[in-house]
Image (cartoon, rainbow, N blue to C red; front, side, top):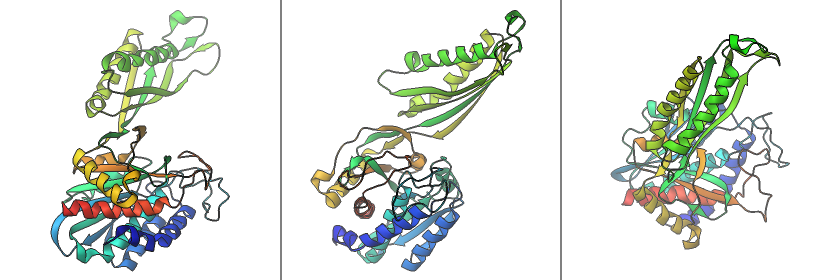
Length: 387
């Protein structure tokens, strides 16, 4: 079978499908129409399917005989962004846009489903198609896992269209690919009073400032310099006017890293510094920590299979290396249940359209990348099942 030729055969379908979902974006965990349309497409193909994880969808393609099960994942949610692209397929939903390429992930996986279903008599094993909601809020993967989506899965493969990589190029190297994302909130209680009489108060603004500075010592002095890590306080709220000392303060921030060891230590390190710094200033502090995502780390064996798949779909020159990114991806939670690989599929082509980064109101992609995505999903499934 020639996957490249089969992909070309269905490229018009991929483009039309992508444009439909681009015109009709929906927010995280509320992808009701998206779910409905995906199920309609799978039904038209004669593929077994069912809802999962709220607004997610799972499709099942069984080969001619028993074998392993490979899962292919695409996320389906959009962003609260007002699109500014003057294109025929511009978003019809005010204030919502597929500004990160999830529309292309849906189209790529549906196209791969069409191809795999056509050739199901030519491979053994099972392909599980995972259309996941809520990636942007890091809730969808966990919801689908809770609903049992990873039961019986021997490996899982995902892609992300990437506008910092040229069209026709794919990065699938082993090791860390995307960072963890933790979120912390700190509530500080001091004692307010007159700005001219600080001795009568416990200044929550001073406590917040001290906490911000002390948190920097985590990366500087507690983490191995060879392990990249970030602790950022993104918001501080305290005080009401110029001559009033604030009795309360609030802050929010994020952590990022590429190591599970570093990731698992963050909460304890932050909590210790937050609480003990507050005590040193005679205040109290309470911290909430949420693990949004864990690091996305490619399994070496899965990465090796993916690299060979890329060469078959995009040629030897199609396989490139690309630096890991500090963005988070809840695909990582699937990797706790089966070996995984995550690919960056290039979609940048400045000869066709202007470059804009992900999450920008003018984000768009070279639609030739849809063929690479669909082909790679398909080829990886076949290569994994044949090993």
